[in-house]
Each structure stands twice: as C-alpha cells, then as structure tokens.
Amino acid sequence: MPILLLVIVGAAAGFIATRLLDLRSSVPVTIAIGIAGALFGTLILRLIGALFGMAAGFVGAILGAMALIWIWKKLLDRC
Image (cartoon, rainbow, N blue to C red; front, side, top):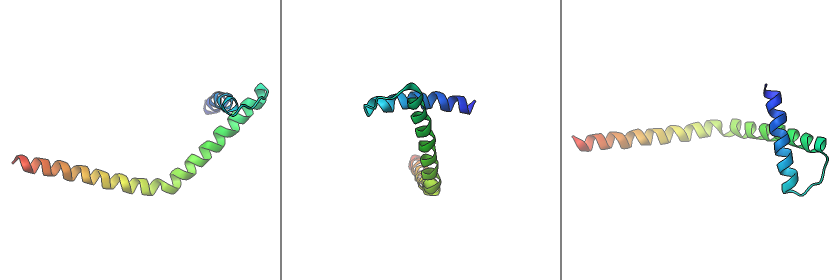
C-alpha cells in the first residue's frame, strides 16, 4: 500500500511541480519527477527530524514544564 500511495502522491506532486516551474514534459517523466521528488523530500525531512529531534523534544519538555508551572501558580492563587 505505501508504494501505491507514493506513486499517487508522487504523480500529483510531479504534476504540480512541473506546472509551477513551467516544465513541459511527458506524463511518465512527470510521474518519475514526482516520485523521485517524494523520495528525496522524505529523506531530507527524516534527516532533519533526526538531527533536530532531540532538540525539539527538549524544547517541548521546557514548554510543558512552563505550562505546568503556570497551572500550578493559578491553582495556588485561588487558595
């Protein structure tokens, strides 16, 4: 199923990209461009996610702690 989804999304992405960049190409070339772009984009996004995953988790932990401190202060102000 993921391969079929990749082909469908890749074909749509290739169509949109070729139209945005005004590239006149055949349907198979458009689909190939879209599939290759989908693979490349997925690879780049996963790489960025792996590099910044821990940093994003750390920022999320800080924001979560800040939210809990804010809630704690609001509860203490009521009493």
